[in-house]
Amino acid sequence: MARGDAPRDSYHLVGISFFILGLGTLLPWNFFITAIPYFQARLAGDSNSTARTLSTNHTGPEDAFNFNNWVTLLSQLPLLLFTLLNSFLYQCIPETVRILGSLLAILLLFALTAALVKVDMSPGPFFSITMASVCFINSFSAVLQGSLFGQLGTMPSTYSTLFLSGQGLAGIFAALAMLLSMASGVDTQTSALGYFITPCVGTLMSIVCYLSLPHLKFARYYLAKKPSEAQAQELETKAELLHSDEKNGIPNSPQRVALTLDLDLEKELEPEPDEPQEPGKPSVFIVFQKIWLTALCLVLVFTVTLSVFPAITAMVTSSTSPGKWSQFFNPICCFLLFNIMDCLGRSLTSYFLWPDEDSRLLPLLVCLRFLFVPLFMLCHVPQRSRLPILFPQDAYFITFMLLFAISNGYLVSLTMCLAPRQVLPHEREVAGALMTFFLALGLSCGASLSFLFKALL
Image 1 (cartoon, rainbow, N blue to C red):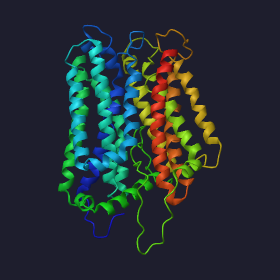
Image 2: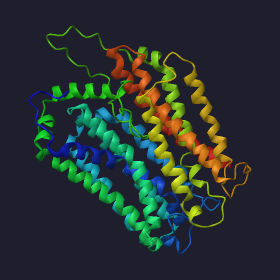
Image 3: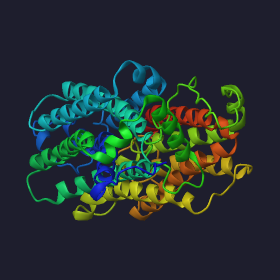
Image 4: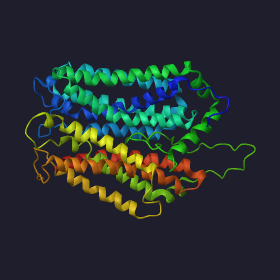
């Protein structure tokens, strides 16, 4: 995509900037869900709640607010909403305002969350403030992702891969930050404060990186393109991210692909004078008829994943006696393990694609993942009122999580790879937009179902 007279990216500064920006876009989701034990401790209502440890699990009847479920749902609904509103927002609000405004809003909301660590308040107001913060911060994050992918449309496709790689590390980064804060040896309130200051620093670094782009010759060369040319290259880049043979081109987090494509299906590229006439505008209905089964599989994959992760999985505790392992069990075996294995699963499609688009094995494999719902519900969640504990040992939960995470990563990546293969070349943009919508739909359905499964425990 790069032109012959393009300047070089000195010291890879532009690539590093987009890598950090990718990391910053998914810090909100990952830092909030990884800190679920902290929020549940605050909602327990004790006078010493602000001093509770990040690692304490509060999963019994005292979790009257269903924090796990609400934080998941209110993180995914803004994603679905802004997927639908992408085109309208991008036409009405300038790009710089969208990106800088979103980053500043995320920074302020993270600063508010960090400040609340030092403020002792009753559970009700704390829950309301936190849920409002989760909703707004994920809304701004959704706008930020879509806007940055628009900028990446004018850049060589390598920079899209770097951006996605940065997003892939967000979950691992949040889990490691949690572990470091727990192992720091300081008092628990300071530990929690340090944990929430970390994403503030990460977001501030993202702001610095974005502001530095106009001062880098390489970035100016691509970002200063004419709108029509930028739009053409944006569509080309987004199509490349959906090609089945694009290594590392599939995002590495539930939210990551949801805003890579605009839903404005009215846009068309005018053919170059020396190229043959492009086919007419593809029909959304015809494209949907071709990919409906693959789209349904994508919805079901994320429905299963978000229905139990993190709402149920974050409630599982170690069956061993109290000690270091029980303290670090959930951050390691739930969040860190999930993100690492999910990343591994998504990378597998760079080497093989099985089953292919004509096989009926894909729906079978997707439906088999529903078995993870009862398996996790029957793990070691100490206080429950209905279901028994059939898998008390830690090894059961770790095994289930390994298979759960790697299957999620692989099947999400596989469905996103197969969809463009099922349509004609000029229909791939519409197919990508439809898959984006169904991905967001699956996330929201899973978050909604988590309330039911939590109630059945």
